[in-house]
Length: 597
Image (cartoon, rainbow, N blue to C red):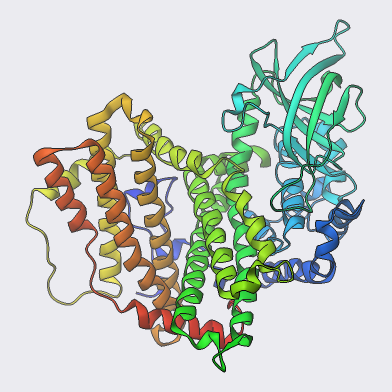
């Protein structure tokens, strides 16, 4: 069916679990318009001209170098893509701002500094600040004249952000809040000019404050010595009766959690985008090395074992990219919908990000683990040279590891994924009960083996639909069996989350492929078809394992046997020659001598 005859069907956050995705209601990188492509190219050019040639100097933390690079990025408009023009930004849509994060994601420590500045360093003030606060701070942050940072984590409160001990007490004259406490792991902390800091007013009212460098009672510790991202500034912040003017309270007293958690939704998606950018650069380094490194008088890229690795990294990146821009499109459309309904720009984007908070958590997990896989295999392709600082892949390997920790650890994000789905179901925002009951009924019936002629991609669509059924029977039975105890069964929740993560990415890859075949024809899409079918085939096995592990943890007897049969039934796919498919995927990378952007 051509795209002209398709009906648009927007999905709400989490609805893909129970509804079929529409390939013509998703956004794919092949649809980037000329302006978006130009923005992405500008980011790549900036890294290649300003950052990568001096990457060793950056890692040695040469005084003043990183802040000067952030300022240069600001001069080119790269810090203000998502900031309204009224505050000195470019006022671009969410997809374009996501592209900037991807485009700058291959800059190692610089990518961390600029992402922290444009994200958690700027957005809290932009979205929650008063008009006066925005007018004072945002233009300087957008231009790079001032640098931003974010103080949330404390030595004894990491994932438990609300367990912070930093306090804020109103001064006797009522003009200041006096902050006392400590923050740690503060990216950009060593050179930032303005910080969003969280403290508890009167011992329990978790609140945000805008703190400027130079405020009385505010000091910082020395730079941390880190395993990776060595060129990024990371320090502790200390507050000893730090005098913060009352007009620098950010948002409402006691509502700091709204700021912290909503900003994280956007940050998780943007982290996935940056991870994708970093992975593309690392993958290209690995392909080039494999083409030039000879063993037994032949390039190692000709060996099947190396082709397998190149294909796997290409597949994971392409699938991550498919899910990323599918989700970015949803957020962009929801933002436009809320703007049309009269919401101010800050409430529109925050509302859109909250709607798709489930997807943002999923992207953060998959994107960070994808990058870890890509750089790990990159080191392996480089062999002994990959362990040497002379080859930049070693830097990528060390720098990647932090991504699975910040913006909420991947364990926390897995638990959040299931928790948010269940809470939306309880509130009536997501109808899980009906579909779950239907799947249980289907388990008792004779399987439908299909008949006659099928439409294009019918088998792949059926596989995705069955993956969703596997999630529903596992999650539904776990909730029924464990009820309120389920929150303490984290292993089961993470099994269910992994089933959902694989399914969301498999479906996103399928929808992108359908779009491309519709645009270019099947003959021109062999690379994409091979990636999608190989990924789907592997996802079936993974979902089967996650489902069986979860079921074996809470069910027994006839119930267990019936559910395990269901998991087997819903993860069955036709045989597929993944070896030949991977070789074809790898051969495209080898021919292009890079990851095909």
